Image (cartoon, rainbow, N blue to C red; front, top):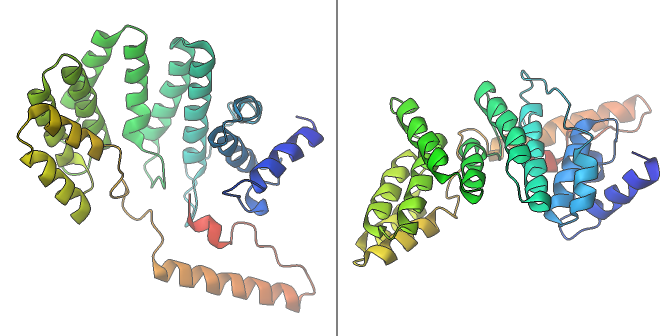
Amino acid sequence: MEKQEWQGYVQKVASCDYPIPLNLINDYDDWKCRSNVGRMLMILKDIEGAMAVLATVKDVQPDMEDAPEFGLSEAEHKVLCLRDIAEIIWRLTGTGDAPIIYLNEAYRLCREYKKVFRSADRGAIWARRLELQRSCGAEDAALSEARAMLEAEKAVEGVNPYRFHALKFIAESMAEQGDYAKAALLLADAYKSFPMNDAAQKALAEAEAAADAKERYAMYHHCTTIQYQPWEKDNVPTLEDVRRLQERNFARREAAKAAGEEPDEKGGSFQSLIK
């Protein structure tokens, strides 16, 4: 990519309504910066620009041992890039074969990476493949995959994004057939695998109380659009984390001043605490 083209994309991302700090997007030689720029261009609906940037990282092999204290790991960066590339191809072509190839690779990385993801929903990455299959007329095959996932995950107790999304997918198919009562039951079951908090419990209780099956399903399904809690533990910085990061940055600045150097804040800003 030409330097002028890259800097144009960086400027667009740095000056949007939700700007990303320059130290997280400016370095073309750091593929994670290209990941940040490409994915933000996708959010800004610059599809051509997003594809141009994300295409530069599609063959990058992430370090599967990378597990930063703050921010996204290389594995999660790659998963999110593959997800967005799949979405771009789907929007441009309307065919599922090529997008599913990228989603398959993203799903493989989700399974292989055993450490914390900060923002990626591993179950949603897997389920997007099923949604594309359904859109391409292969719903029966997608439903078979969903049921196979339930069987494979049946021994896993507690929070489980794969079980949640498998049940959600099957419930949506039941609702399309008009069986709202069964669809609502499936979503209620799905929430046994969801990270709950008080707000989620309140919303689910209200859904369960709805007398009409169609309304009950709609209320349950609305809950699936809200991420009440992070899927994975330990992926939200605590106040103690922020304090330690501030102390670390202060020590780094003081050391740089003592050495007569400019402090390097890359990877040490508060923005690195968020996705």
